[in-house]
Image (cartoon, rainbow, N blue to C red; front, side, top):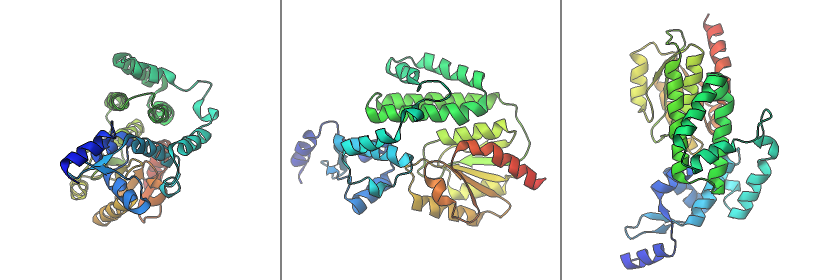
Length: 312
């Protein structure tokens, strides 16, 4: 295809985007998109003038829905043949009214209202007030998952735009960092190193885990996102770290995670535990030797108590 033909083809798909934008928009990693393309025949991107993948809007819409259903435990192979309408029906059937109502409160539509009206400062205030009122543990275990779920629904339904979803994530991360900083600094064990592996840029789950660990009095060392395995091992060897805690988003490829976890496990002594959580990975990783998996962030306080009882 020559450049003129490529530009003509792109013109027929206004609003399409490249693979990097699709990754940011859907939360599905580039490697996963390429694997699906080979294995399932979907997505089927066009090519731009440089031969790079170019995804039409309707395919991006389907990918958003597939990602949301995967977050609820469905496997991608069972979703690829469904069109947007079928995927939307599945999503609606799984998200009942009961899921949208908790403890007598309606779903947090105030959150969407704040984002759509550009009231970032007011939303920041709302989040800060909720942390102060609920305390760190309740906020992280109950409120943040509910707000994240509502954001995901609004994103799929087209109620909010990509930049508004990014704004929410940034505001939430800032509030969690502030909450962590406000907690008394503790030297108590366990001593926990927190990070993500290569190509895992999402840190919201990592901050949620750190907030709960800090609230339990654990000493935390956060290296942020995408720390090379060799550096993780080096940091553990240079300190008295008891636990390496890793967070994964639902889009992170399982095989890549498995290989990295096995490499990390092999580079650490048996005295250093590895805790893993996030997305659907915990369900798979529980079969790996020497890896402790968490299906929900709310399991962390009990795990800390169990660790201390075992070490005492």
